[in-house]
Amino acid sequence: MRIRATVAAVTGALALSAFAVPAAQATGSDSHNPVDTLKALHAATSGKSAFTGSTPADTGTPYALDAKFGNVKINGGKPIVAGTSGKVTAPVTFTVTHGAGVDVTADDTELDLIIYRGAFDDPTNILVGDDWPTCTNTSATVASCKGTIDILPGEELYNADATTFKALGYVIDWNDVDPYTDDDIDWTKVGYAEGDALATTKLQRLSKLTVNAAPEPVKKGKTITVTGSLTRANWDTAKYTGYSGVYAQLQFRKKNSTTYSTVKSVKTTSTGGLKTTVKASVDGYYRWSFVGTTSSPAVKAAGDFIDVK
Image (cartoon, rainbow, N blue to C red; front, side):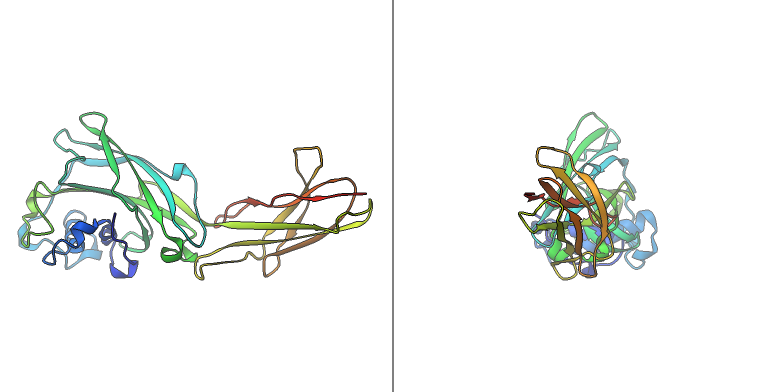
């Protein structure tokens, strides 16, 4: 299990790897800061300005590890949808192609894949898995890996996070160097590889939709009023709030049918409310259907039955 931290606790693109420090390692020594180690690695190998001042100095620089990420898939290619509480777990799969002398399954090798949004050198939010990915060597030079991205919406998300996140992967071969106890690391013994923008995934705010058709029963030819409410997760307040200014379709299916047809489209009010009227004709079910937006997924209300006399 990893220690979770707030984004404000670290800065810089690979400072995001600070989120990947196992609890046992993070608390094992006060003499070494793994955040600084990863910053130093990134500075030495990529030269990104975000890590100025965190260079390995006269202790050498890590060598370029022969490892490359590929075939990255997050949540099966589908958006990650989160409500306001609980935990959302999205599966992650990828491969690592490496030199014959590299073993990504070794105990002294650190490997992870995370997602972030914002600029590479100054990410706005970073999301990781609770556990390290597991890898299996499928050949002498290819490893197949799987892991998760675990999200606590009530603690880690804001409404602005309903957008595209990019995947970043890294591999560190410590080669028996102990970064958690060694004060003076010989960086020339450490191998490092990183891949950015390996894939993208969208985060969406969970949508909910209700419906009520009345009166019931109703005489044939009389007016039916159909109301409802479209709400979605508000990650800023940890509540569900009305989704205003978007359209939902009123749909109807006859009592013995399995197919809904669209009757009309209605725009939600400032509080997410929906309301319209129709003429009663035959027994059947009314529902609201929302096709979704880039920030919120599609949702359909359960049908509400109307008995027409």
